[in-house]
Image 1 (spheres, rainbow, N blue to C red):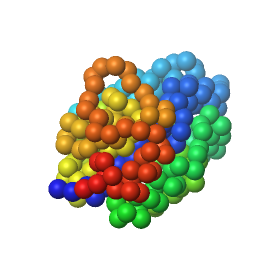
Image 2 (cartoon, one colour):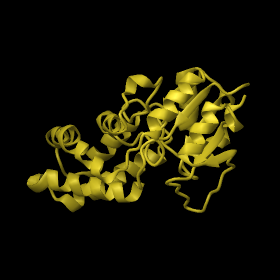
Image 3 (cartoon, rainbow, N blue to C red):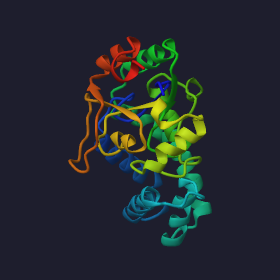
Image 4 (cartoon, rainbow, N blue to C red):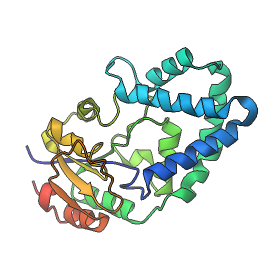
Length: 241
């Protein structure tokens, strides 16, 4: 089958940034915002552990949000009904300020515009370990709206995370496409290029490339954001057929 759908990673790909320093700043900001409401160190440790529970979950009948909340209830010492509104307020009011720890560039809009001009379907395949608000804010930082994509993966609606191959199969099911019709574009060897395991073609973006060494996956094409734009607009390489 010929390629008709492009899945784009967000952090480090469409949104230029280094992921680990950003996560550090995010957790610091959350800790400051929560303040005296709870023991900050315990809370952040619990958030990390609940996130790991989402990443390792194989329960296809539970959303990532459900897995996170269940872990939080079972292992935390706080009343979730009291602390959740604090989280919601943080994502609404404080999370947008974290844009200063990223490097938005014009390439994102140009790449998406180029893909649409060539008739490709486009979706944002960002790791759904964040609430919808946090992901939509990050799209806004590159000047884009969720409505500009056929799908944006968020933890309220996704049942798997990267690097689980099931995450990519779920996207295909939602879009009604076969993996062989898709190209996964991302900057992370382990989390994005794993899409090759389900039969997707892959494009590794090198500007903010991340590679933990193992495991390693086949890369069909790689290049900078500028080279990605050229390949999509010219329907060359993995985007040719």
